[in-house]
Length: 291
Image (cartoon, rainbow, N blue to C red; front, side, top):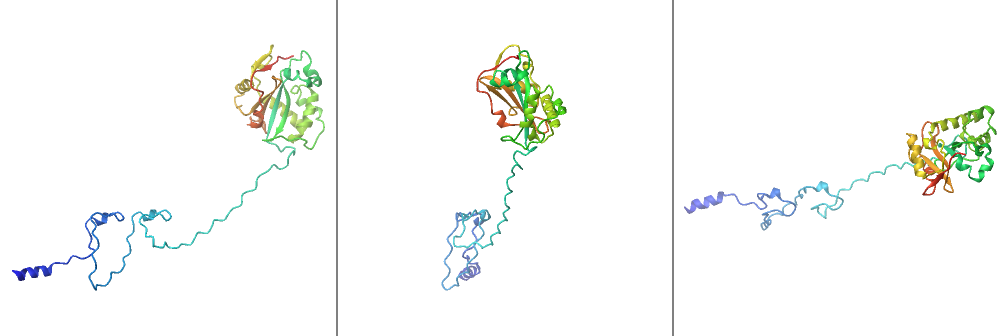
C-alpha cells in the first residue's frame, strides 16, 4: 500500500511557479483579482530571463507622457521630427489703384433734394427758379455722386470743363436748373470716368430707378415725420431697397435730402453703411409743402 502511494506521488506533475491563474486574462493594470504573489525561485536555479512587459490595453491612446500604466523607465523610440511646412508669405493687401482717378469708385449715391426744405436755407438765394413762388417742386436731383466704400473721390482730373448742349438735354427736367447740372458735372461727374453725355444720361437713369412714395407727390400742408418713417416709405415703394441702402438728411429739423445708394452699373441698390448712418436727429422733423 505504501509503495503504491509513493508511486502515485512520483507521477503527479509539480505545480509550476508563475502558472496562469484562472481569470488572469481579465486583469486590468495591477488590480487583478485573486492574483498570488510569484513564488520565490529555488535556490541555485538560474534567474529567469526578464520578460517583455505585456502591452497595456489602451496604450495606443496615450496622450503625451500621461500613458496609463506606462513604465517610467522605458525610453520611447526616437522618431525624426517632421520637417516644418514651408511658410507661404501672405498676399499683399490690395489697395485702390489710384485715389481720385476718374472711373475708379465703388458705387453711386443719388441725392434727392426735398426742394421745399432746401428753399428754407440760405442757399436758396442762389437757386434761382427752383425756389421761385409757385415752382411746385418736390424731390429733385441734387447730384449723382461716385462714392468709395469709405469716403469719396474729389478733385479728379478735369476732362471736358462744360457739358455740351446735347449732354444737358439728357438731364433736362431732372436737375432743377441747368446751372446745377453744370456744377455737378464739374464736381462729381468728372470722377465717374464717363463722358458728359453719358454721365447726364446716367443721372436720368438713376432718377428713374427710384420711385418716390406717393405721400411726397404734392403735399399741400407741412407734415411731421421721422427719418426712419421716411426710409420705410421709400423701402415700401422700392421692393429691392433695403435698410442700410438709404440715408435721410435734415437741417434744423427740416427734411433736406434722401440719399439712395446704387450699384456702379445702376442696375440695383447698394449697401452703404457710411451713408445710411447719417440720420437726422431722433425726433420729429418737418416736411414742408411745395412752394
